[in-house]
Length: 144
Image 1: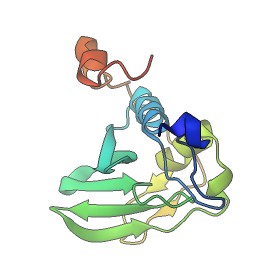
Image 2: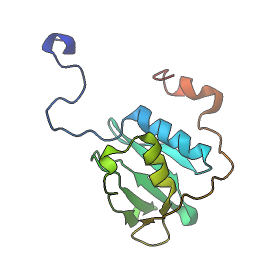
Image 3: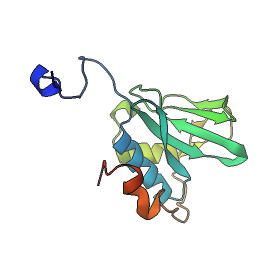
């Protein structure tokens, strides 16, 4: 049977089931961060699990929202080892994309337990979007 015959549309299969960041939202957030000069990438954490990976100095990377929970949090990794984290940001389960971008941009990763800065940093020169002219070819034309 196909999903339409059973009534399942591919959305949340169970009431109360929480999905993480979907692929298109993660891509838009990464693109918005790159527009601010932050070295962000689409992170593919598993089968149908996506998030945002921010490259930091010292070979570290912050992996945002790759665990499928509703709130926004991150793990800071270096060579596959956990070296820090960003605790769940209060109220982030209701953030829109612009608020997610702002929260990631304001994070100070200097301590093992990262914190949010009060002020938004001045945007740097924009970075080019990943994939360039072949982006839609590489991703299989799944978005506009």
